[in-house]
Image (cartoon, rainbow, N blue to C red; front, side, top):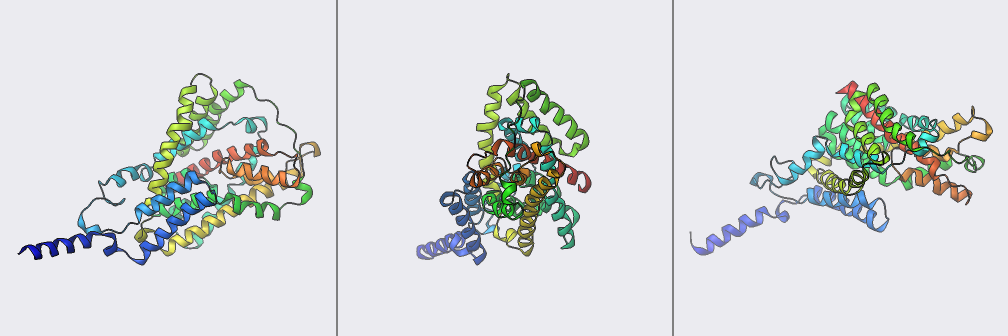
Length: 385
């Protein structure tokens, strides 16, 4: 082989390894989806902490390459760097670390002061079980239906944890769906809240919550952990880390650990989780009819969950004395999108009465939703695993 043939052969080989030579319409479609997520995060300010890592992860996961070349760069190629990072998702150990951070940054005072708000968080979990039944009717296997249904809890880490155990092949679609709808809380929930409440109900002012003692704050994570995990042991990885993180926050002796868990550790895990979840949406795995069904079911579950919370408060008000009635606008906060859903309750309340601050009241069902979604995941895991 002369020199010119050698150059041509090497150039052809180089070209065959480029993205240009391997690109398909599905790669282009997914790259556009990734760019759209980044645009939503930066331009529209839709949960940039979630959508920027996920959006760029989608770009990473959909760069075309020759999978037969043995380059070990794809997220599904055993031994690749991305595959090693993805183990935190597929093996389910990123979500408990996120829950540790959530516990360390969450103040459960609103729930402790008004325990009946736990019922609002529980009511919002109807979205999970409603979507489960519809998924079964659409032909999904029970374990797949359970993984899809958990999207209704509006809790990305919980959805990832449960899906990694029940339906790993659907992990990319379910994770992106869950985080997408979490980011779209400000778009999805307000119309539902307006539809199912009257102007009179939106103007209900709730009494300020009582002061919660430090001893109550310390006892709550211990008792909460024991009660929930004795009932649903399968929720131990999530609930254990959630209540442990909260004890670090409230005991007053581990401030440094609580700050690390709620700041540095959570930020690191969020970056890795978002990026690897996005990268898992390779076109060949993601662009399927099942993915479209999952997004539709996830949206339905989210709508049912938000509606159930609002309607439950209205029903609950029928038996509550006038002085203790709840504003139905806090019902949407029963989903586990902390603190986004609670902020929506507060903003909508202020829209109708600039002096009606609902944020602290809405935080009660909001943090109850975190516990409720983890318990629901434990129930599904216990029955379906």
